[in-house]
Image (cartoon, rainbow, N blue to C red; front, side, top):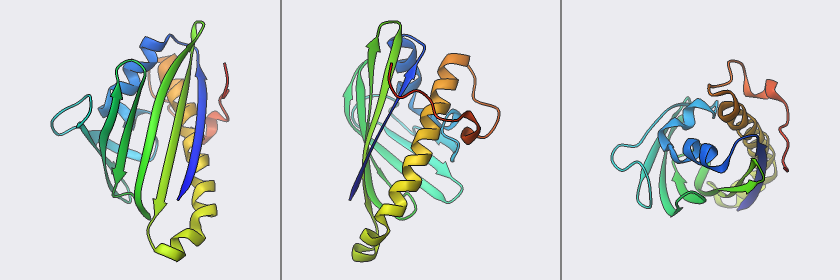
Amino acid sequence: MFKMNGSVCIDAPVAAVWAVLADLESIHRWVESIRHSSCPTQRRGVGAMRVCELKQGTIHETIVEWNEGRSFKYRGQGAPMMESATNMWSVEARGTQTLVTSSAEVVLKGGFFGRLLEPLAKLVATRLGAESLASLKYYVEQGHPYPGRARELGPAPALC
């Protein structure tokens, strides 16, 4: 298992940032690797499930914690190479800005061999996570998805 943490400072109030994060079906607008996302039944709160279609497969994310206006946590299954993963998203007001934090735990498939791959997988996942946070910042602040590749955005400020 490996853990990852990332954060981004967004120039918008908490309510505006939470509205984007809590719209579970909109994640494909700011995470480049997700082609499409949907919630087959419930769209918010504990028990909601988000289905994310990737080029390499489909991930099913089930919301296991929901603290309205502040945070949510999901458990994901189906990602390539991953046995399971959890991720907690939280928002915190910093004056007129919002600090968004993402904290994930990932277990790779493959037992011993999966553990050998953890350093490389963590490096790739950390880079992709940083790109997603920068893309989220752009999406919230500009009101539309970034038109180019997320890596073009460069690192976003991690602190407010």
